[in-house]
Length: 88
Image (tube, rainbow, N blue to C red):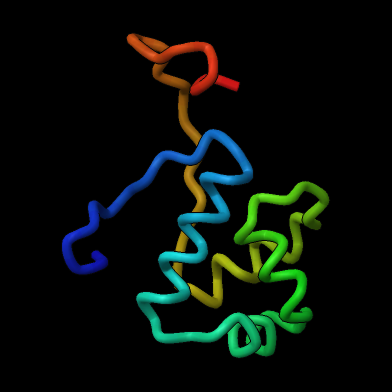
C-alpha cells in the first residue's frame, strides 16, 4: 500500500491510468528515464503514457506495471451514479 493512498484505483481512461503510473513512479523515487531503463523503452514513451496519450503497446504497459510492482485487475463496471463522461 502506498502511504495514504488506497490499495486499488480505478482508471477508466488513458489519462487516469497515466496519472496512476506517474504517481507510482514518483512514490518509488524513479525518474522517467530510470523507469524506461527498467522496462527497456525510452523516456519519451514513459512521458507519453503518463500524459495519457494513446498508442501504447500492451507489452510496454505490462512491463511498466511489473517494474512498478503493480497489477491490473479487470472486473465488472459499476455504473451506479456515474456520469457518462466517467464511463467512457
